[in-house]
Image (cartoon, rainbow, N blue to C red; front, side, top):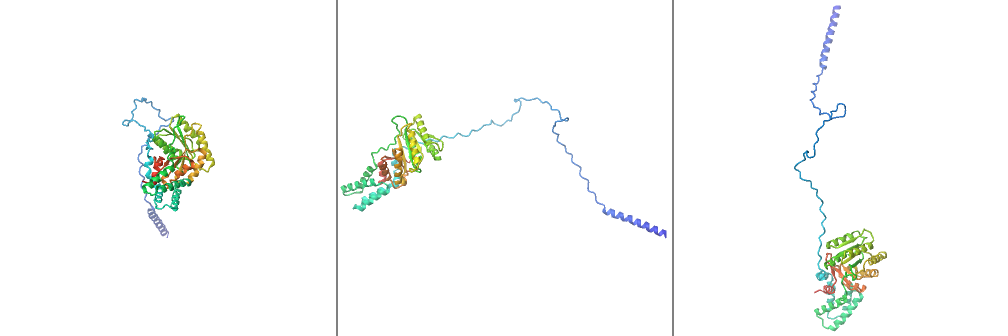
Length: 400
């Protein structure tokens, strides 16, 4: 019996050992391959450092500047200077003689209706009261003015009655003669720039805002330069930012010297300096552009009187030109009255006369102030300011 038990125990032990071997072989894992050997990297030489192991600096021979090799092949370094600003080219203005004749076609386009209307009415077979009233209305519509209109109609009535039969040529000659008389052929229309006491002639230009006053001053400088005068421009319109720049541009185009002050500065001071420099330079004329101002602003008008008084401390004023916009009609006469009270107007400049059919303002403003129209503006061109010539003006009114 004992032998049997021993045999069973041995069998169990043997079976257990075999079972452990089988299970162990199943659980055994494949080992991963060994990592590759690290590549040999040559470390960069260590930077020299301060310490006990630092290498002692070696002494090397110094080279002079002559021994140093400079780069070859490169040319000398050239520093380009910015181009100097070119001086504006000096223009040669057109001669003033005959300008109005050249511009007559432009004037005729705007004024021809007046002359043709009068000729048409005068050519009627029977000149009754209704016809004469139409003639009066035509003249009044053209801003000739009440008194001048009445004078012209009375003279025409008398001469037509004496003439009897009326051919178109006779009527044109009659109307031309009477209109020239009304315009005033004997008035002195010269822009005076000769100071009897010596020194430059001084011209002050005044007017309300928007009449083209600064532009007229610049164009007037061209007129004087065209007649052989040297000109100094005084930019006394210190209230409008662009006025001095605009006047300077006009001056540079014809070689005129300009005197200007700070924006918002005292206009009387600028005018004084302009006359002073004009005397020092022995210029022929000094043109002073004043600020545009409404005739209803008492303070501004008083300031204009101050500018006049200050200028006269340097030299007498030879001309005070009032610039009027011909398109404003009768309102221009109101402006003229107020300016005349402050600064003693000596001449009228009518601008934009090519843009209105009311050319009769020439007659009306002369009658109102008792001073002549000396210049008229007939366009935007630089040389479209012309000395006023009564005969050429009337010829433009009635046509060929």
